[in-house]
Amino acid sequence: MEQLEELFRIVDLVQSGESVLVKYHPSYAPEFLVLLLIEYGRKRDVPIVIDDNFDSLHVLQKHLRFWGIEEDFSDALVVKSGGRINVGNVIANVEFSSEPLVYIKKYEETMKNALAEIKDSINIALGLERLFAFIHSPREYYLFITELQKMLGNTKRKAAYLMNTEVASTLEFNPLPELEYIASTVVEITPTPVSAKVTFLKTPVRELLGREYEVSLEGMLDAFHGKGL
Image (cartoon, rainbow, N blue to C red; front, top):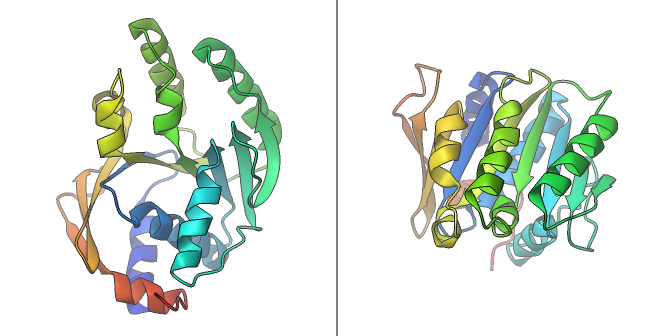
């Protein structure tokens, strides 16, 4: 629990309006990070909003079950885009379009209506790589980036964009360089066999700048009552 409280304290330090880019390598990092933020929301009474692109939350939920962790995400407000499997409290669906301009307009309208009364939330974006896979021109790419940029400074939320670095690097237009520029905080999660190293590469919080934290897998499993394999 001591490890969990230290991680909560780090989330406390992230300011409202920030966009946090979380770069991770293939691992269970996104599963445990989302679980951590869900628990943070419960303990701090902060609404959690999840952008679930192409059933990413369903995959994440199944992965957690392999660790013996049952989480239904029922108290997370979920906005779905693409996919057909509902997980959590789905409050809205964004009709997916392979035309970025059309999709962005639908997304903006849906989020505005669905979250009009929500304040001080944590917004977790899952599966962004899959959205960028539909972008095939510089114009579409920068249009999408510009829309993400507009969200920076929205004090109704703290945003966490989770991005698999290996998948992103294979896309026709790798979003990471621009997202690293836009984001107010950039975090990299590097896995080891029994832990994850969390490094703050960019942040306006002096206490966190350049810091590296090692999070043990055993500690996370104990905190969330996982049975393991």
